[in-house]
Length: 312
Image 1 (cartoon, helix red, strand yellow):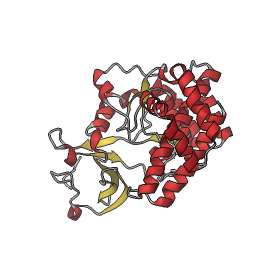
Image 2 (image 1 turned 120 degrees about the vertical axis):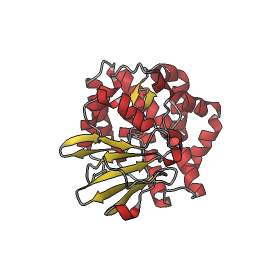
Image 3 (image 1 turned 120 degrees about the horizontal axis):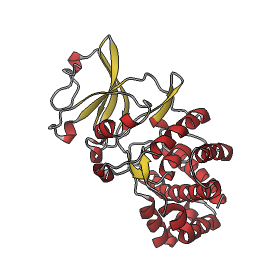
Image 4 (image 1 turned 45 degrees about the horizontal axis):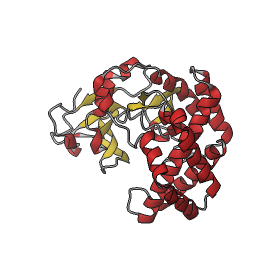
């Protein structure tokens, strides 16, 4: 297709397009945009938005996604292979305006597809080198257990019950290997927050696959159910969490009680870990998100932590 409106440095030539609309900024400050090169239609222009993921999404589109049902926007073009990473880009079909408000029906529609990609046999050696946006469970577990005092200090700072912290850390120390670290590795989308999936024309669509990697099943589930995001708020309730977990369990060969207990521990552990990151972001007030969004994210994460810790 004609991409002459993109220059050799991966920049849009404004004089050659009809209109452009910024959708969001990535972690490196570059913008994902809806571009109208002509009046005939629009595309989603996506430069490299995370410096550590150069070429990853195009690779996943070529090697992994053809094995799934077409629940993703089509990749229409990409920058030449020899271009420098900072000048790279991808061009996707435009699915139109998307709603990223939390709806249980959208999350439930996502679960069967998640089960399908979790069931794929990934035997491509190169895939093992791809990394998610946050450390894996073994690193987070070690971080929580190596300095218990710091987490009790955080609990005091955030007015969390000390017994809740003790319960999570004790369970992690006693049952962490069984419930978390011994879980099988599966294909993970990697960043399945509310902004990366939506219902389009009655069908679920999943966006932004650049963080796909191997992880345990709880990673994708946690993003859909309990992972907070400053831009995409959601209020997760106990009934909704149970409904989503029950849907996943019903479609997999897992032991319901043990699998769900493992999820509660995973969610409590990561929510506690996230609380420290969010508190630091609020304290420094030097990031890309406004304080009011970070404070809302903090409240959501506290609620998830308390609800999941209580299930232990």
